[in-house]
Length: 171
Image (tube, rainbow, N blue to C red; front, side):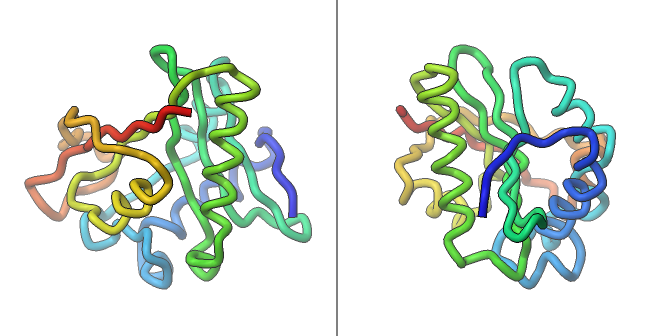
């Protein structure tokens, strides 16, 4: 088991991992699925490329036996770390891998980048996911952002009441 930062050779594997964690029938094997909230794609090669091209960010990969099992995009935004695109293979969700990826992401942001906090956005109706982050020290900030309805790069909404909550943890 090891961590490393992604490179161009990882694009297809990253797209497959993220899609499997959030969309379609396979995502329903795990608890992070958004399949009941959103259809369409969760990410594509263009999104992964944009993350790789971001000079203020990295995609953290977690591997076991040389195979990608989990990932997260971390970046520097507005004086804090940002945590997103968090994905664990559906059949491994609940095994503790997600906690390891989150902790390593926080370590990079705190110790490597010397930033004081980590932020993320979570769809506000994802109560179980919000509770997961709260158990790890994140708090709702009270700041909400609108869901980008009409932009299919973020998925095709199955509800008309989606919005994002911003969560934050002081590192």
